[in-house]
Image (cartoon, rainbow, N blue to C red; front, side, top):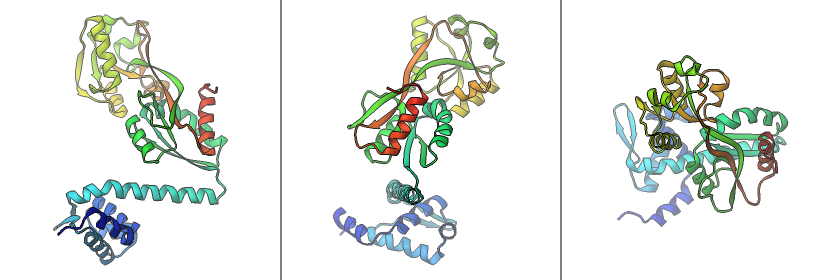
Length: 313
């Protein structure tokens, strides 16, 4: 009879080690016992033994063996997110301990949306690093829902995103930077030479559109409905910034994007924003902070971003 969940949990607490998790993750990534052993500085028999130990503890098969190596089973794929999060947390903890031992001022884990990275962090962080060299910043890209999930798991100190209708309990949203939608294109697009474009001009152009669940798509659909027009669409639908930029360079296309997302490319002259008949405001970018017990380093970073954006209260 299979062991109960409680029995398996007690076995893992008593006998599982971080090495087991490391082998699980690396073997899933590399698909080879030999390469896994080389990557973590172990012998092949030691890796094989650790895997056998873990399979015995859980009473399940974690990998399918085949001629070219191994492949994760469905159970293994279920375990991987937990193993990856545990190793990531261990790595961050090690860096924090070293930073503190070297008299650093602390570690701040930041999750930021694409818009917040391009519109805010690429400008603010170099200056912040110069002002506060003792603060170590761990920056990862994640949109608002992923940020809130990380907050629930206590894996983030500061989130940067747009305001959401629901904010995690005991956290608050602080606006930092206004934003708006722009119609952008390559500098050699025919409409780029016009001082002001009309809705008729826009309706006759071909558009690179974003997925149906994106804010830019909602805004474009709203404009088309209000003006009583429809637009020609390219065959590609994407919200990936690099792909959007490549498409604009290679084809005669327009696209509707938040100014924050394309700020770097616009400043570098790689895309231009058309002069529209009216402005198209969009929700501001801001930061999500704990309401209380904010670490000194996190508060320092938050205050710097407020000052950088001229939003200091």
